[in-house]
Length: 308
Image (cartoon, rainbow, N blue to C red):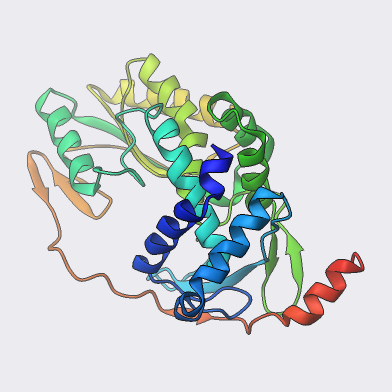
């Protein structure tokens, strides 16, 4: 798996995906266009580093974007070179991990969408499930336990080199414009591998609820559990809290409600049998509230060699 991922052809394919996704430069200030100007040399160098195990990711660039509600969301942007390697790894592990995920999980998966999640909720309503737990997990990405995450990863990915690469990205350094710090907990939002790791971490929640015949519809850290009665909904909430405690997580908000009262999930509003889906609109670019200056790579390299 590692040798395939480290090949020039694999990295070239990964670069095409990174290019299609556009994205900002990372901590070194190198844009996709600049990387592409000498992509053959850059990809050959990356391939060589991966094969001789000398590859080391650059710090992530921590920016702040507007969540749309007046709050700021931190995103950690890998350098283009590191996005290429992460994407190459993702292409190798995605088929292995995705087949382990449950049908109730709709985020960050090929062929799945908000509309499909809404359709599933409608199906359950038609089957008589009129009450629900409407919940989201508190600071989910920031609180993922690294030990539990890699314990789960090792169940399916039996490759030390791939695991080591993912560890370097998850436990990597971050440049916020003033200082460099190391990630101790959570996974960085903005990295190509983070979404699939998030789904892997919450697969235990999915399995635990489904084993108890709960009707779960989850989209990343937002989810609903549909029930036939209000009492069943309270029992589902208690079960959910029990599972999350084992994952060292907790709910941010949780409401017990019904289709009669109406609720909104993933931007879709449900009132009895009525579903109000918002019109498709072109995606707006998120407003960047703070974008740090690039890190002086010469000074960074010197300090790195001296062990800071």
